[in-house]
Length: 287
Image (cartoon, rainbow, N blue to C red):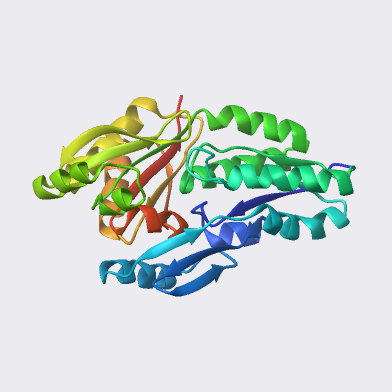
């Protein structure tokens, strides 16, 4: 039995049309705006995203909820009952407990459905870094790779998935406990934009500090040009309601004349709640 489905969730910023056209399964996730809880059952539209970021700008507190092991069991069971194998690409274990929760669900389902294979690949990534992995997973599947071989290939590619980004305001990362309050205050006062990566452990790491958004955006492209694997032409620019800056990055990439397939997508509430409006990320596969 080699039939399997690829699963992602809202932390993978990817085109909804691509998900539908390629029969990729989407796991619902919850997020909050003020006191209102919303459930995303699919990739949110840009209109919904804009409303979300406007609410943040208006001062409403936003939050996210992790998927519990119970919910994973609930989502995976209908596929297990049909003997459909599962390949799931969750948010980095360095940023969330979703990977651990999915593993717990896998252990529970394994006893009840011993013939069903469930592969959970720790992406050590977020936003459109996961979108790139989903595209590679689909390509591998279409080439006839088994679910086990696909998972092995992805585990290797994970190490080369590059997510470089900057944020407009550090107060959201401060609120989540990912940076110190003093750092956020000084950066805001001096218009310093920290450039961050998701490192090899799947955690956030600051690699540079730039004065102003355009210099920060330019540094994303410089780093990309140094590290990009030319065998992977698809790159993503994901943004938190910052289309002008996303297009600025796209223009800088096009100046490199590398024949890139550049995708621009809006960042979901799951990631956006923690980075805030104005965040821009450049996601690619490195050497």
